Length: 125
Image 1: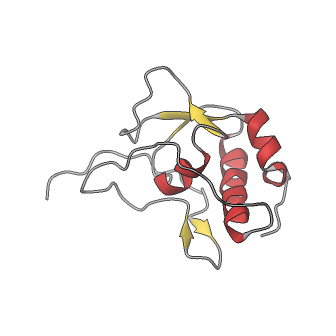
Image 2: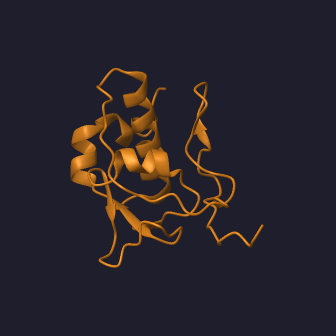
C-alpha cells in the first residue's frame, strides 16, 4: 500500500453523534482516494433524526471554527456533502473537491435559517 495523503486532524472536534453510529470525522486518509466534496440532496426534515444529526454536525463546525475558513482535513465527506453548497461553501475560487487541504467556510446566513439550533451555546441531542 502506498503512502496515504497528508490529512489535518482537527483535534478536539467531536468524532460523531452519540448513540447513532454516525461519524463526523475519519481516522485516516482513504487509501482508495479522497472522497469528493459535492452537493448531495438532503431529504431530512425538521424533527427527524437525520435533521438533528445535520444540525449537530453544523453545531460542531460552528463552535470549532466559527465564521473563519477551515481546512477539510479529517471531516467526514458524507456529512459535509449534505451541507455543501448551502450551509458550507468553498472558501476560495481554487476549491479542489478531492483535496483534504480544501478550504471551506460556513455560510452563516443560510446555516442560521436552516439550523438555528446549531448556533445555540449548548445543543440538546
